[in-house]
Length: 224
Length: 224
DNA sequence: GCTTGTGAAACGTTTCACAGCA
DNA sequence: TGCTGTGAAACGTTTCACAAGC
Image: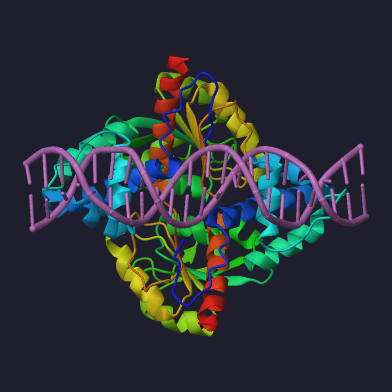
C-alpha cells in the first residue's frame, strides 16, 4: 500500500489483514458452538472465500495448521489475536458526543474485541458533564482535557464522531494529544502526518455502493 | 467480483466504484467553495490517489473531461450521481432501535446524499411507539409491519442494526419484505439469496485493522 | 501551454495444483 | 485418505507514457 523508503516491505496485502478479522469472528462463533477444529474450506465457505485464499492469508504469518486435521479453533484464535494485536486491551477515546458518538461510546461490540472506551469529549457546554446513555461511568468531558486523558489513561486510539466541518480540527487535536491512530466517521479525507494510521468509516458511501449495486443488479438481471 | 453466467461482465472494478463516491464528496466540497473546474491531479491529491487513477476510474463510465481544461465540477457531480443512482432519492428502513439504530435513523449525512429513512423497527414492546430522538416524526414500529411499510413507502434498502444473534432473522425478514439491498452493522456474515446486494460495516474490524497498522507502524519505524 | 483518455507495462492478488505430512 | 503450505499460473488493478484536443 504505502511503500516507505528504508522499510523492507515484506508486504502482507491489506485485504489479507482485513480478512483475518473476519476469520477471527467466525472462529469465535465456532468456539461458542464448541467446535474443536475447522478447515480452510469450512472457514472460507462461511465468508465466501476459497479454501486457498484462507490458507494463503494465514501463511503470511506462519504455519498454524495441521495437515490432515485442519486448524485447532482455540489455537488459531490466539494466533490471530496476537497478529492483530488484540491479545491485549486497547484504550480509545470518542470525540463528539452526538447520537453517533454516544452510540459508539456505548457499543458493546468494541469491548468484546479488546477495545475499551475510556472517555468521551465534546465542546458543547450543554453536553459537558452529562453521562453517556447506558454507560453512567462515562461523563462527557471538554476537549481541553484531551491531551491529559490520553497521557494519563494510556489512550492509543481516537474515534472521531463529529460533523465534517469540525473533523480536521479534531484530527489535529488527537494527533497532538498523542494517539497512535484514528477511526474517522466524518465524511472528509483527514490530513495527518505521513504514515499516521487512519481508518475511515464512510456511512453514506456504503449506501451509495449499495445503490449502485442494486441498479446494476437489476440491469444485468433484465439482460439475462 | 461475482461473474455470473449469462451476464457479460464489462467489469468495472469494485474499488473504482468506491472511489467514485469519494470523488463525489470532494467535488461537492469544491462546489461549496465555488470552484468551477478541477483536474484529475487536484482531485486525486485530496484523496491520496494518482491523477491516472482518477482518470481511469472516470473513463469506465464515459468521457466527462475537457482536455486542457479539466473537469467542470457541477457537471461531474451530476454525472457521478447518475452513475451511482443517487440522482433520485432512495428510501430505507432501519431495523433495530438501539443506540446505534437510533443514531443511524437520525444521521443527517444520509439525507444529504439522497437517502431517506422512512421507518424504524424493533420488536421490543417497550420501544414500540416511541419516537426516535431528534426525529419526532419517526416512531418505532413492530417488525410485523415491515412488509407493509416496504410496499407502501417504496422502500428499497434495509439497514440492519440489531445484535449479531438477531441479524440473520432480520436479514431474512428484509429480503422477504422486498428490499433490494441490505446495509449490515451486525458482526455476522449474512446468508442471502445469490447475488443479493449486502454491504457490511464492521465497526470492530476497523478498529482491529487500526490496531494492526499501529503495531506494524511502530515496528517499521524502529527498523528504519 | 495544459489536461484528458487510453493502450501497454508493471505490479499485486487470487486461484490452481500438487508435494508433503498426519 | 484428508488437509495444509506453497511455488507457479491466471487474473485484476494501478501506473506509465503519450497521442489527441482545448
